[in-house]
Length: 128
Image (tube, rainbow, N blue to C red; front, top):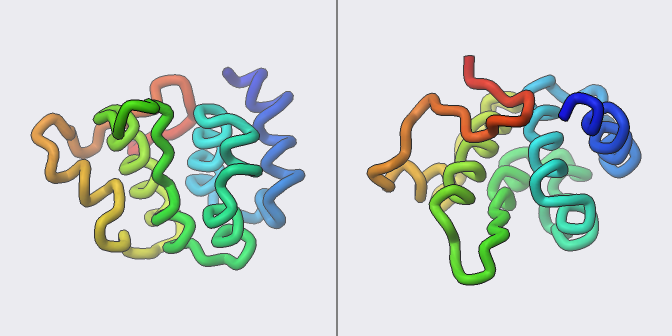
C-alpha cells in the first residue's frame, strides 16, 4: 500500500487537486483513501460536484459529496460506514460541521456502527 501511495495515488492527487500538499494531513489521508478505493476515474472524471467543491475550497460541500457506493444493487452498510468515517475525518481536518442527511447521519442511525472504529484497514486513516 505504501509503495502504491507514493508511486501512484499521491502524484495523481497532486496533479488534480490544487494545493493538495498544503491541506491538513487528515484531509490528505481522506483523499488518499478515496482515490485508492474508488479509483482515479470515479474521483476525477465522474465526481464533478466533489471536485468542484474541492477546487472552490468548499470543505463542507466536499464532505457532503463523499457518497460513493460501488455496490450496483444498492447502498451497502460497508460503503456507508466508510463514507461516514471519511466525512468525519474530513470535517475534523477543516473544522466544519456535518451537513444534514450525510453518510455520517445515516450510519449513526445504524445499530452496527461502532464510533471510533477506523473502517480503512489498508490506508493511513486513523482516529487515534
